[in-house]
Amino acid sequence: MAKVPRPIHVGVVAPPFPSHYRALQALAAELIERGHRVTFIDRADAARWLDDPRIGFHTLGHASHPSGSLNRLLRLAASPGSPWGLLRLIRELAANTDMLCRELPEALGTLGIDLLLCDQMEAAGGLVAEAAGLPYVSVACALPVNREPGIPLPVMPMAFGQGSRFTKMYASSERVYDVLMSPLRRAIAVNAETFGLPPRDGLHACLSPHAQISQTVPGFELPRRALPAHFHHVGPLRPPAMSQGALALPVAEGRPLVFASLGTLQGHRYRLFRRIARACRHLDVQLLLAHCGGLSAHQVHILKREGATWVTDFAPQRAALARADAVITHGGLNTVMDALSTRTPMLVLPIAFDQPGVAVRIEYAGVGLRTSPTFAGTRSLAGKLHELLHDGRFTAPLERLGAQVDAAGGVPAAANIVENTFAGTVPAGRMDCA
Image (cartoon, rainbow, N blue to C red; front, side, top):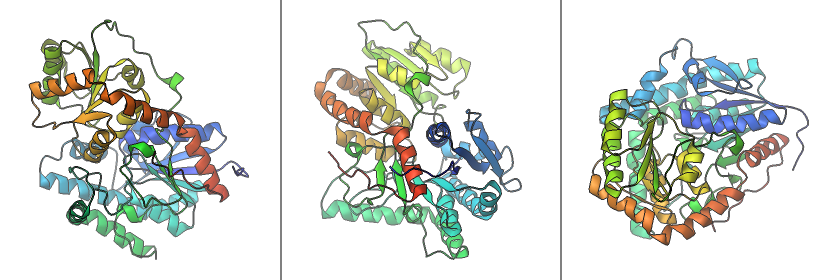
């Protein structure tokens, strides 16, 4: 591994969503431990997602994205509600990219940034870094956006299959997706032209040619064959396990424990939680339900009456997963990677973003089941849960992928890649798909 000649100042550019910040903060903390300086660069509201005082934050978008503006984006992301709501969300994301492309170049000079960490879901980081001649590393906090014939886009709710029929279907779905994403694609294309860069019009065209990092492991991928040599599966980007809390609940022995969480943005889905609680009551299992602050005290009371054993805003996730016999999740990649680490079978109810793609991979890898968050009733959920709890076919795949997660390297491996990128000697990524 090449030695970085001096401490460097790393800038971080990411969409202002909590799960993305959580993963990148873990990597930032590791870099700080190694003597480097890290600053997140975003609108003012995004600073709320950082809780490590050692990490810097530089505010952009004072005029176009003032304090309070993030709440609108979060509401749209949590529940677009209609095709028009989805279009408003895409326009909001395009406006965020435009703002960063306008204001980020000056900020890089002001801050003295040496290298950018660029979340794959925000194109501005890669565009600005390339235009400025800065080294940059792309990080896939969600499923990688790297495109490949025969691999469906993560956002598309379709099963995986091989052969010409599936390849054509996935190509058609890409065209539909590109039409839907037209506002963001235009923002990317216009800013690339403004910077004097080669034409590009999608997130997948703004990835680093130096190094790309993914929170996944090879065994969780669909059978890819065209990832670049500088693509690295490092597994979950998490703080050390000892920094996580313990599960201080009187869990009864002899009765299975189910942990249910729909993530920070989807914790308001009371009706879905109610069906989950009823399903667990039907099976006579213990249910720990974490709603991330999305429910009222009255709704919590009803969920307990309907079958939830414990209902809380937040639970120590890794400790809960380690104790649980199954987890019900929306398919957020952070939760899924933690579940692989603890060998916990999953029932995934994909709602938005890359969650359909995560659900496809969970079934393909044999580590869980998926069902519809909209149409699955109490009996259907109970049936799927019973299968997870009593069918041993999930054990071997969970052990195989869990071992890959354990060996992937996590934040230390990711920090090595960042340092090597700055030093100019990035090693080839691990491309095995065992």
